[in-house]
Amino acid sequence: AQSVTQLGSHVSVSEGALVLLRCNYSSSVPPYLFWYVQYPNQGLQLLLKYTSAATLVKGINGFEAEFKKSETSFHLTKPSAHMSDAAEYFCAVSDVKGGSEKLVFGKGMKLTVNP
Amino acid sequence: NAGVMQNPRHLVRRRGQEARLRCSPMKGHSHVYWYRQLPEEGLKFMVYLQKENIIDESGMPKERFSAEFPKEGPSILRIQQVVRGDSAAYFCASSQGASGNTIYFGEGSWLTVV
Image 1 (tube, each protein chain N blue to C red):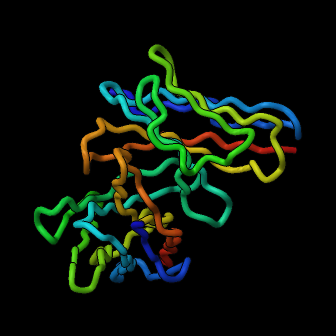
Image 2: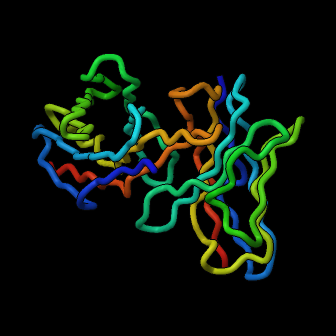
């Protein structure tokens, strides 16, 4: 079965610093991969997705992620953190089996941005 | 262009009562998913439905939980005889269904069992 690992649960950066959120996946087939962001008491908003086109995917709010098959990784980056980036970030992989397709999520990473 | 609509946003139930959560998918979407988010945990898949059909309920607890997506009207997640452990955020999502299609999430329904 497909799975996603997000090591750690919190990361803290200074405003203007690089944001790097790690995601490793396990998949028996070429995966579809997603990053979602969740602000407090809100739903999930799609940041970006990888669907086997370009390996470097650009998303909203200045985020991007690079698919590296050799490392089974899909890390999320942003060159310069903004206070408004403080939120929880979830990596997810699409699990297709027996006519069903669903997202399998990592445990999430809370990003704190310090002034 | 309305997104995925969930109601109620917040629901308080006493132990033993029933909770009903509603979800209207995005316009043009015929695939609905329910996820549960427990405190300090990620989202866990519960059930995947298409109109009048349950496609995958592998994440649903065996008892007390049921889901439907009728031909007309919203999808309903029903929890009977709620217990404190059911307190969580329940998210509905929808998609057009093709593999790799984006799954869009609603704002969630927060259930508190007292």
